[in-house]
Each structure stands twice: as C-alpha cells, then as structure tokens.
Length: 198
Length: 198
Image (tube, rainbow over all chains, first blue to last red; front, side):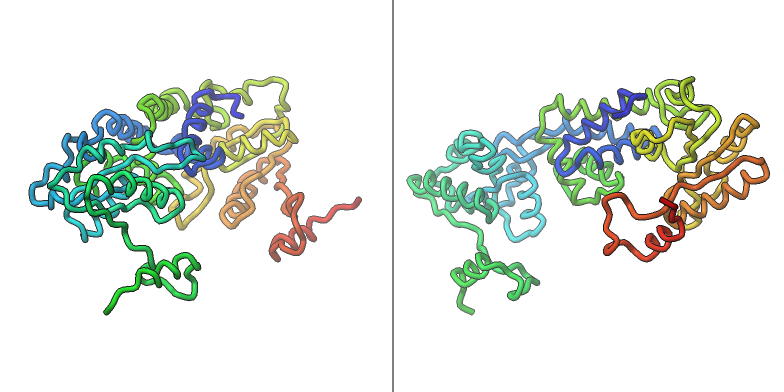
C-alpha cells in the first residue's frame, strides 16, 4: 500500500491485528503516531513492553498480576471459602469494582467455544478443581450469560458436583435501569424464572 | 482502577490517547496485548519505535517518508509543473492510489481551524509559496470539502493569486455510486453548480 515506507506498512499491519481495529483504523492510528511527539509514541511502545515484561499470571487464580500470588489471593481479609469463577481477568475486575463480593476468584482464561477450537482442556479447569477442598463452601459460576458462557457453566457444574461443593450461577434478569419493553424474550423469561419474594 | 498493576494502568492510559479509542476500548486492547504472545506484543512496540526512528518528512513537500526527498519529489517521470495541495499525508496516499494525477504534492500538515487553535502559521504554507516559480503552471487545492478545508482553500487562493499561478479546487459533487435521494442539500447544490456538458 505505502511504497515509500516499509516501517509504516509494518506498523499498520501490527495495529490491524488488534481486536476491533481494521486496516483503515490501523492506518489512521499509524498516521496519528507519526504526527505525535516522539516521546508520546515511545511512551506507548514502552508501556506495551513493560506490561509484557512485568505482568504475569497468579499461580493460584490465574488473574493477571505483577506479583504472585495476586493481591486478591494474598488478601487474608477476604472470605477464603467461596470462589467466583470468571472467563477473563477483565470480568474479575468488573465484578471486583462492583464490590458485592469479597471472596476469591478463579480466571478460566476463556470459555468453551468449539467454533473457535477452544475446548475444556484449553481453560484452567483442572487448576480450579485442584483448589476445591472441604474449606470451600461455594463456587459461583460467573461466566457470561451467552451460549458459550452457559455451556462452560454447565460443564463446570458437571465436574464440580461430584466434589460435594455448592455451585451457584449468577442471576440472569433485567439489568438495573433497563426497560421491560426493550428487553429480549430470553432475558424476560429468565427474569420471570428467577423471581424472588419481596 | 486496577490496583494490582501499575503497568497495565499506564498502558491503558497510553492507548486511550489514540484517536477514536476511549478508556473502555483501551482496556480491551490492553487485555488483548496481555493475552497474545510476547513476540506479537513486542512486534507492535518495535513497529512504533521503528516508525518514529526511521520515518521523517520530505523537506520539499512535507510528505512522510523514510528518504529525503520522498519517492514522489524524486521521481522525474512525474509532471513537475503541477502541485496538488493536501491537508495530510494520508490524503496524499488516497489521491495517489486513485492514480488520476501524476504531478507533485504538497502536504500542509493540517487545516486552518481556529477552534483547535490552528492558524495559517501552523501549516506548511510558506514552504508551498516558496515552491511556486514560473515552471509551476497549476496548483490544485485538494483540502477536504468541509468548513475548515474550504477556509484553508480560500486562504491559499488569496496568497497564491498574486503569484500569477493557476489555482483550481477539486470538484465537489455526488460521490460515484452515490444516491441522489440520500445526498445532503449542500452536496446536491454543489453538484448542480459544477455541472458539465456531456
């Protein structure tokens, strides 16, 4: 595309590999990086390097962390008898910001998705099973409420049941601030199913 | 936001400075970079560094280039008597790919935009004026067909007229493949104004 500069071409194709960024946006980003000061561009490059050098995974819960174990697993003030299972570290962050839960987490690192070639063995499921002992009273399965997330939840339930631990699933229903009128049928029927006495 | 890792926080705020990328997308990109292989992430970091180190600006036309003068200014097969003025190097690329023009270019490096604090002195206008001599027969002003682009074009015309060079403006009209029904009023009136005999 760009005869005069191989390095721009390389930057564009590298940027285009990021999720949600096509070749056209990648071109726009590359031109932006060309225009900004050298310091600003190099700061981004260094930030990427830094993250890959410093950040690893917690050997207990698979959360991303600069220290091992992570700040959650090493926090004695948290409940040690309840584990919340999520797909990604970003889900953990979202839940932990909501502050309704003060137990431990386990990050699967994905969801069962045959179409993408991701099976149970690609997730940190055996690591989760290894954490279950008589001290653990409950496992909350907080995978996403979509087809793959539900399939992953079912698979986990099947493996966890024999271990005699209580397994729960986060509630599906209407989002707070949402609108009955605009909710889809699946959500409405889940909201009805999961109704609670007031 | 993310207590366990300063470096992720830094990466997110650096990514969020890119155009069209908010804090939420920046978070998603940062998590993606965490998940990909170290090689892939470092390739992107190096590509950014490379671009800032290797790519500069052509001293004649202000086009981005790894060599000086750029491949356009140093190509003797191009017409040397006509200069097409564009706002950004990306506009030059788009025009040059369209292949209707085989003359020289001049990249202003922006457009007059008082709201953003960009005045005529921030653009490479004096460099353009310095290129005008009796060998130059025509200057095509190909700034964008919006308010700032038109203002820039008018300003250039005012400065170029006294130099006795022919000044033209790219045609405004209906885009090829476009639809009369969905065109805005401004475009339609420009299309009528600019009508040509067939």
